[in-house]
Amino acid sequence: MKNIMISLMTITALGVWGQTATPFSVEIEPMTIINAPGVHSYTSGKTADGKWVVLGGRIDGLHQRQPFAAFKEQENNKSIYVIDPVSEQVWSKSLSTLPTALFEQLQSTNQQFHQKDSILYITGGYGFSPTVNDHITFPYLSAVSLNEVANAVINGTAISSYFRQINDVRFAVTGGYMGYLNNEFYLVGGQLFDGRYNPMGPNNGPGFVQVYSEEIKRFGITDNGTNLSIVNYTATVDAANLHRRDYNMVPQVFSNGTLGYTAFSGVFQLNVDLPFLNTVDITETNHQVNNTFSQYLSQYHSAHLPIYDGAEKAMSTVFFGGMSQYTMDNSGNLVQDDNVPFVKTISKVVRYDDNSMQEIKLPIEMPTLVGSGAEFIPVDDYFTHEILYLDSLPAVRTLVGYIYGGIESTAENIFTINDGTQSSASNVIFKVYINKATDNSIKEQLLKGDQVFNLTVYPNPTTNLLNLDFYNPSQTDIDLTIYSVEGKLVMSKQFKQLNRGSNHIVIHLDSLPIGSYEVEITNGIEKTVKQIIKK
Image 1 (cartoon, helix red, strand yellow):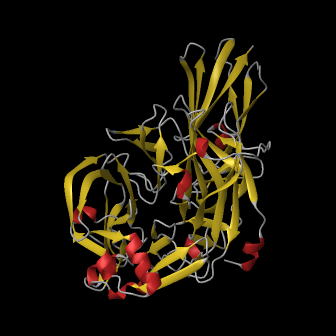
Image 2 (cartoon, rainbow, N blue to C red; image 1 turned 180 degrees about the horizontal axis):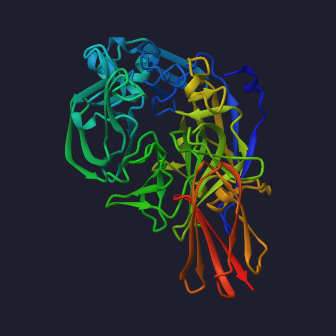
Image 3 (cartoon, rainbow, N blue to C red; image 1 turned 180 degrees about the vertical axis):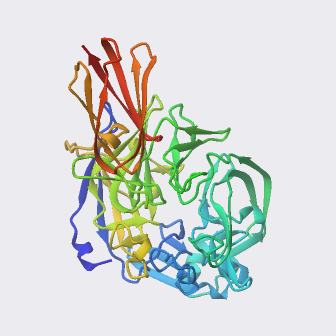
């Protein structure tokens, strides 16, 4: 990352949870630690004294399109790093002294991981295996004793005895998420990807096998510090809604007080190479899809912070940068970009006490196009079940965690031109503060379907002709329907392949009797409705 980044001033945003909420601000402040590696899509845990243990991931930027240039072995992170964010010290040690299976897995990218007490559990990951002589998704569950291995790295002693691993094809997953509820681990979504990455498809160059998990795998882990085993394994399949990877799964307090997780967005939908916009709530008893809410920002994995306001029973998730299918233009329109570009956006999704959800764009941004493949690392004092409880914070500016790593891009869309120089693995760290003493009136922007089209109808009332001006986020068909106040369909039209951008349509209402109507337009995903009167 460019040195100019380090001189940035603190960035502040007011946290507004709705009409009744506890006011506070979110602040980010960049810092650097000499010798901290540039890395993204990595695995991390924390020691009892707050040091970070960083494994795996990649030290290059966004993977290239060319199969033999993508996911090169020499760009794997092959070291274990211990980082002390307080003393700003870094220690490292090569993983090459580990047994072969551990060494290969722990340098892979997009592993799933979860820390329970002082043990970091890791499943899967994608990368090159010299043993197989190909790129594979690793079929392993591994465990790392964090306190012991960190001390060994710092003191320069052997590390092998603090790792253990079992081979189990059920854990051959990459790009999913691991969680933990009521003594059970959850491995959600992701995919098995074996072979060389090739966006042209297996019939045009190197072949590969790609199978989405489409499952919630629940299981227990028996671990005596030497041996691992799996108990009480079950799997729930939902091909329509769990066919997603590289998403954000975030701990939540639901409106009834139940703890669980929400899977936000992710890629790709079953029948089209576009991100999901809906979410999936996961509890101990079931999972439930929310199709009444659309998330327009942060479709890929990024650093995120869950915050619960117990006084108002409002659950919020803040997303820092990353990649988004929608961006905002200068007029406040949501603009669709199916290339899902890198963005600077900082946004939040709020779940209110009535279980309704809203997405809000904060009036601040990341300083550069950074955040995809980064992690938020909490300061544990104020977190329970991985959630920051706002009520527990003092009424002052409080450090609650750090954002570390990720991909930094030089432009929003680089995939088709990427030769490896357009992006890099970031080593910049952002301190994240919550300030309950701040009560500034800073404008936030609520995102909703109406903003996709920004529809205007005129004249209204009208006698015969009705003009519709709207913004079309992509070149697609637009369906127009008109309903009476009783809900009866009185008109239906389709406009084929309208241009992306501003559009103007005129419709004739001479066949309709005098009265009030609802005009609805939709592109099949979003819709907006306007009330009109014919006189």
